[in-house]
Length: 305
Image 1 (cartoon, one colour):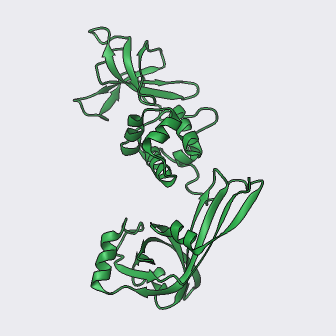
Image 2 (cartoon, one colour; image 1 turned 90 degrees about the horizontal axis):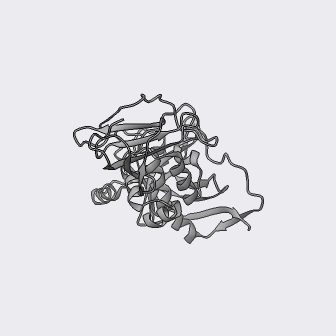
Image 3 (cartoon, rainbow, N blue to C red; image 1 turned 135 degrees about the vertical axis):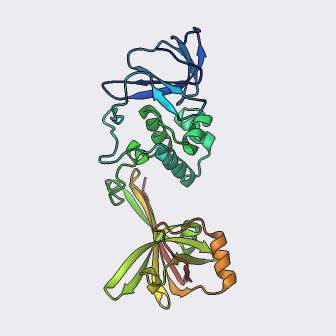
């Protein structure tokens, strides 16, 4: 085994597939033989390492991060699994997916990067790297992040993406609370995905749309011949919700009001400028519809304890 500065040392158990990796930041022999000073990705700590038979060197070529090849045994393609935690069935983990899920959940809870790193007992620099770039965190790192965010390892790994929300058990002592109109507005007053209920030639339909909350109105972009476009010219219902499976709690908000098509050039330009995203389904969806809320109702399920 020989290494250069900047190479990565990967240690992966052949029995549990538990994995840890770090950058080689110090050599003790000119020929690149062990031991090495390694800065671990999950803790940002530097330790002296005498690699065993379960260790591999991934050489960085031409100084380009991510351009690597293994100098030891090839990757078997097997996923990580430890203490019964395995990759989601039928899916392949994409580097960076875990980091994106961590970032979304962290922002949803209003946690700073530093606070999340402190809770997860890791370097803020590594957490920032994990959120912003493709990375392959160890199972131990994902477990600590899940604990810090109050979620599950499977949720961060993307398990259950093909299942409807609410697969968990109900709380032992649930509390159902009616939300005030002000609370309802606070919950939906940004952007996201909601559902609009419309009447179609085939009967009632509930269709998900990417929406914006602009100047007190709900706006979404669609195509003139699509199901959501049938909301225009009638009073419709629009619903937004969130389910926290890990905590068996959540909320839902229902808005009722007339829908119209937005035709004023200045209003359309403002909606385009303020839109957080293009419609997820893609395609030509240049028609803006707006719902003027006349009635808000909402409920929240939480623990009575």
